[in-house]
Length: 261
Image (cartoon, rainbow, N blue to C red; front, side, top):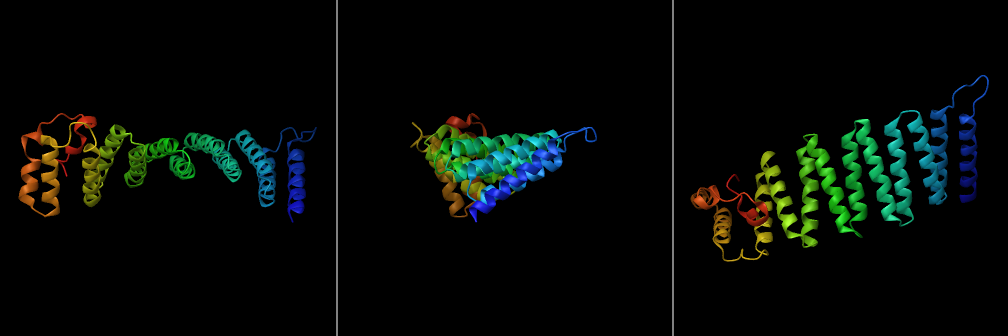
């Protein structure tokens, strides 16, 4: 079965090379047909578990789609090349190809596809490289945010925030969580807004000088009022001078920017 698929792949490559030849009656290479044949060859190699050869075929497909100015299909082929690297457990190389594909999606004017590919890349690399996963999730969130797709953006931002906590990059986590909270507020998802606010309080409690401070007491009072559904208590804390006129530096007082909940 594998040998048959490999033979089929080479037959498709031969057809692709024929499509690229020119003659007196054929002045231009047929890039579209060549790309199609390399795509078929890639699938054959993949089915035969010849992932390195499949990767090469996908890259050839991408090359000829690019020559034909069909960037979306070129990007798809490069993304598939990345998946062939994933099959070989070569994750850094896989991510490089997927990121390259995402740049082409953006150039093609399909940012949503780029963001979804970045999300997939984040999931692939997360088990072995949390730092890179954070970078990919944040990039994907940024693309969705630029497209005003805040629900998708905030979900990815949340993934990045929680990984930053695991990495103990608490200042960055606090900034990311604050942005996440504000985004939930903007889309009027108030239960999640408050849940993220609790995360902020937890993160800030790990920062030097926070525990027992006036800021900490105010936050604990606010959370208690919310838990007990005491609207008067929540109102008093939210309208206190501390929360109304505090410094807006989220890296030091991030957990208290809750007056707009």
